Length: 226
Image (cartoon, rainbow, N blue to C red):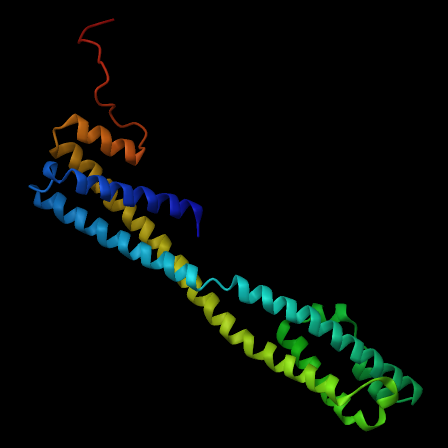
């Protein structure tokens, strides 16, 4: 959650609470009452957006996926080394060209390109499976790698959609903070112009923390005093 937006939200909620505790000073003004209703509606939407943002946070899924990829690429690299050795022993230049890759080279590819490459290597490994038992390549190993590849391929769309939803929530938060700020500015003007109770106004602007506003109850020098 954006710290600046959260700080604003907390101030907005505190402002609304203060208004409801002191309704006698503003409910007679239809304009102020309507503006307070707008503020409450905006705050409720902001609350909903924060909850959506939190529930759609893909951090845990992304971390899990990164861990799977790290492990998967390492195992694919080891498989590639075994196939490379087989290709060199049998002087199979075509195979050598296909499986001459490193773990680092996989990581330099886009995720989609890397998974396509791994899919190709697994197809080759299955093609040579009956000839590579002496190279510690087993059907169990290839089945496990194929299952992990399918899992990684399936994870990308779901994480992408969650990320997009979260971005939408972030945009909504920004818009609602801007809207809430404007409504609060309206209330600053309206309350200071309509409400004549210094105690109420002092409490209100203490919550709002606005610089340059009058300080109520502070002793003022008499007119003409030096």
